[in-house]
Length: 490
Ligand code: NDP
Image (cartoon, rainbow, N blue to C red; front, side):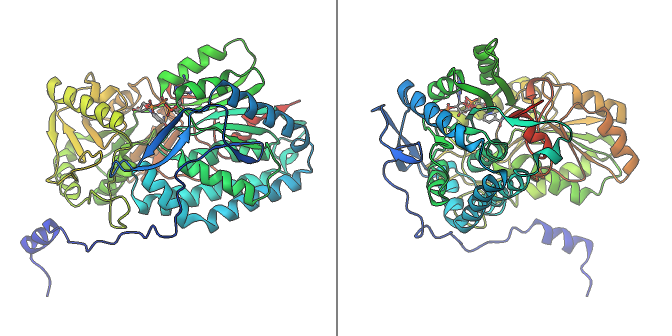
C-alpha cells in the first residue's frame, strides 16, 4: 500500500538508531616514542625536545615525537642530497618499481593506516578507510606509471630532476598530502625531506616503516617531525632546491618571503572559500547530498570545502528545509565507529578558531541553525552548523573557517552567482548544480577556481590536477601537471 504524503514526511523525520560498530584497534601498534627517519633508518635525533601527539576525540596521549632542530634538518637534507646522486641516475623503470611497491604496501597496511589516521586526527574511520588511504595508494600507483615515461609526458624536452625537495604538509589529510608530495617528487627522480603537521605525525611514521619495508634506498625519503620552526628550517635550508607547501595562506606567504631570491622552486596549496552554487533546475535531493559532502566531510577541515552555499532565490526555501532535515540525521561521535559521519575537531586551537568565527557570525547578524546533537564530554567537538541571512561582508562569508560551518547566500541570475562566487580572495574550487550542461560550461568558464565540480563535490583522482588561483596559491598537484614542479625541462 502506498504511503500517504503525511506518512512519508513522518518517516523522513525519523532518525534511525544504529548499534555501535567500532573498528577494532587490536592490530595497530602505536609505539610510545618515535625517532626521526633520516638516511633510511629511524634515528634518535640531535634534538632532545619531544612533544606528545594526542587523540583529539579523547585527549588521550598516543605517542611522543621529536621536535627536530637545525642539526636534524641539516642531517636529513645531507642524506637526501647524497641519495639524489644515485636515485636521479637510477633506471626510471627501477624507480617505478619502488613506487609500485610502496603503493602495494600502503594497500596491505591500509586497515592499520586508517585506524592510525583516525586516532591521530579525529576523522571518521569510514573516511580514512574509504578515501584517504585508498587515494594515497592510488597516488603512488599513478606516479609509478609516469616514472619511466617522462619523455613521453613532455615530448621534445629533456626532463631532469631538480634535487632535494623540502615538503611541509598540514593535518587535515596527513597521509594523502604526504602522497601528493612524495609520489611525484620521487617519480621525477628527486629526493625529499618532509615535515608532517605537529598534530598528525603518526601516519608519516608508519610511512617511514613502509619505506624501509620497500627497501627504498637510504635517504630518498626523510621524515622529520616538529612544529612550525622545523618546517621553516626545512624550507630555508640552502641545499633544498624545491619547496612544496600545503597549509594556511598566512604561512604560505611567510615561506614565499623567506625564500624569495634564493632560486628555490615553490608551489603553494593554500586556503579556500569555495562557492557551491545550486540553480533552480538542479535535482534538489542530489544537491543536498553534495552540499553535505561539500562542507561536513572531514569536519570541514578541507581547503576546497564548499563553505559558501549560493542558492537560487526561487528554491531557497525548499532546499533549506531539506538541508536542515538532512543535517539532523548526521551522526557525530566516536571517529572509530563505522557509522560516524562527523568526527572530532583536529585540535583545541582549531576548535577555538571555529568557535571564534561562529561567534562573529552571530554578532554580525547571521541566523544560526544547529541540529539537536549531544557532544561527547571529552575531546574537541563542534556540531554541524548552518548560517542563513548571511551578507557577503560577514567574516563567515569571507574567511576560511576550516570547520563544519556552512554560510548560505542567495542569488537571482547566473551573472549574480558568478559575481558572488568570485567575490573572495581565494580561488581553489567551486561547485555547480544544474540540469543544463550548457550552463555548467558557461559557469565553469567564468569561475576563478582551480577545480569546478559539476553536480558533485569533493571528488579527487590522482590523474586530475588540483591547485588554486589568487590567495589559494599556485602550482598544480596531481596528473601530468603535478610532475612539472619537480622537473627541469630543457
Ligand atoms: P599552518 O599553515 O600553520 O600549518 C601547515 C603546516 O605548516 C604545518 O606542518 C605547520 O607546522 C607548518 N608551518 C607552520 N609555520 C611554518 C613556517 N613558518 N614555515 C614552514 N612551515 C610552517 O596551518 P594551521 O595548522 O595553523 O591552521 C591554521 C589555518 O590554516 C586553519 O584554520 C585553516 O584555515 C588553514 N589551513 C589550510 C589548509 C589547507 O589545506 N589549505 C591546511 C591546514 C590549515 P605545525 O603543524 O607544526 O604548526
